[in-house]
Image (cartoon, rainbow over the protein chains, first blue to last red):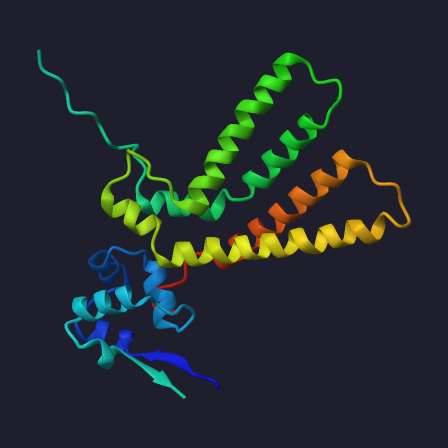
Length: 68
Length: 152
């Protein structure tokens, strides 16, 4: 099985005019965390995924989904 | 009597500590190797033993802080959260795994090597510990390499 977590974090972030640094500050994580999640290098925990969804004002399932 | 508020111009922030984690990580194996040599030296006098012990304790604290994220009182809650965020834990966890794997491989190598060569216990422990540490630090440095550009 080749499941991977896809996301539209960057699209939503740029829609809101936020930089990675600003989003990182909203979620209390480093910019590198945001960068690596956006690029699919790092799979965030449920807690962080929910925090990101909250900061970007979208339901979490609109931000992350399983790509097969 | 009034007190002037303590200036915080030189107070470390999450960003400055992150930068140091990236750029100064090589210091840890270097100091551990140097101190390890001092430990295994047979003719070390009291003063060099004392200096070695202090340096070793400092490095131990640095490693504990890197791996476990021990709270530093001068960092704000925000800075502590950023420094111990998921990516930081992921990187140090992965580096520690590589270190343990290196420990197993080097240990196995020493076991095989002793069939042909007589191994000195001190040197072997030194090589085992520092080899594993070096691998862990290199892995850490690789994963935590230069800050990527905004949209990289």
